[in-house]
Image (tube, rainbow, N blue to C red; front, side, top):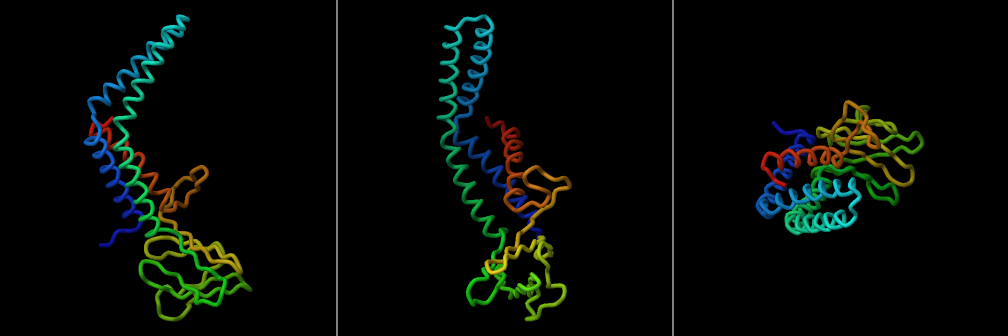
Length: 215
């Protein structure tokens, strides 16, 4: 049974979370990282005590030691951070190409087409009534079920697609990979692949780092 897009992205994000944690575990010296972290916590505590006591000299000394520990931590994390960043950027491009929005330009005399996952579907736009028609079943016809008003959504290939037509410019088919039961501030309840990916990968990375005892 084929997975739905949100399930595929979920598995991809979890897989990359595990990979990122493993990269950090084996490319960075965990013993040195833990020591640096412990030193930072120690000197932070001592600096706080010195501040309360009004000992400015000790505050500066502890602050300097804290900075050194922070620099050691950064040096040890540099390689896994760069590797994880490369993975993240490549994944963003790949997932975006698979599950991203589809734009159909309206300028020129070219045939209007909705291309997704290797299939090309003819599109017809009636600007007088702002209606978009998409030949989803590839039968060469536009049925009532394939006719969409501005702002409406239709289900196709396991995702909802919201139609946003700008007469004379383009038709934007916004891919909605998942829906949140609650509206998320600045995002809403309809999630694109990007937001769904971030919602999974950040907590996923923290969980796997914790399980693998990665600093």
